[in-house]
Image (cartoon, rainbow, N blue to C red; front, top):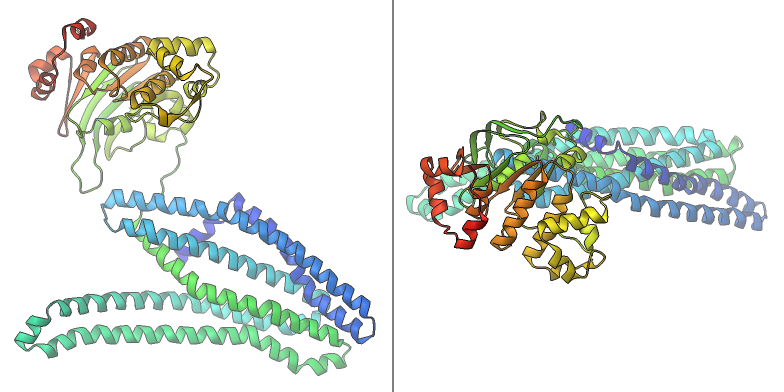
Length: 565
């Protein structure tokens, strides 16, 4: 249980929890004031000063209004505190599933993560309310009559401490009950499935014994759990009712020593309206939501991977891509998509990657761009693994355009300069001309026109994304079938524009014509790879010859394609 509590405590160490704490302060005032207000109002009413008594009650109403304003802000800040916990748990579950290949991760991702988030939020609210009440009541009692506080607070704290001690015992017994329930379900399912065989063979007595032992174990676990509930009731009696009984018992003694009737009534008010409901609420929450939180979170942490440290490296020397024994598999039990790949892509090189659909071309693009982490081996961008770069440095070093190009609602200009916000109009116009998107921009209505993504075709979205990538200051460009919805002539123009732009160009080829324009070609075949020029691969790679044979260029296309030497 210590691990789960430590996780919850670490989630509270952020700025959102400080804001939530700050907005809890206004709630302390009405909690601290209501006992004093009742005491003073009672004494004034008994003394015949009705208006003064009414004034004290009016002040109590005003303090309650201030407290409600603070409570409203608390609920507004709760999401800022709780949602990062959910996001972290989702990352852990997904990382653990990829590491172990566990199919039950879906249940953890959908139900168990939501249970932890909801119970964590409920516990934060209950514990916060309990702390506010305790602090306010203590302040009020000390202001009202320290002698009353001396008889009320100690038994209350003893009862609360006992309830915390019982909580650990309860968690162990809930776990035992869940295991007994699972064992019983397993045994009963096995027996029910073989009822006919049991009847036919006359082994009913053995079957009863087989199910009877888990039933008895489950009953024992449930009885032990019921005893914990009885102990929790005893804790509440000590912390919630004992202070009240003590105060009633010593009431005549206090009045005889100068404590007014109003002060005694104020002390009783603090116990009945403040401490007792607060203790009851926190005990119920810890015994219900608290146990659900601890047990469910424990299951997630047991089977999930910790979130890796964030990217921190902000300096990279060059942008050469080097792969050494690079291996990647989607899960520990899966076949590697890439296996011991050795490749160096020099700065300024134009590389095409070809292979059948689903062979791992997009996986390689994701590794190069720092979106995936190698299972084994190394991949360096310059002198740093791309997965370790800060988001800002990674964005400044490489740009990736996937097959499904992203275009957002806004002006054409905003879409084009997204990766270079300070681009001049002249630079934008030159990029549009180089990629061949002038006709599209004119049809939309110019650079100032609004883009409606739903009204654009897939090819038109690709053209806008290609201009955006062309304007990017990143020296490494990865086109992952980014021209697949363009016609061959538009594809040729765009790829040649990137080749003349400078920097490194890696093209995940959709057509073999893209490979013919590249200086070198990487052929992925199963989890193996072959690298070479077009002429070399036509002699040495059967896979490449088959891919080339599926595409027969027209006479015009032959003129447009300049095979790499």
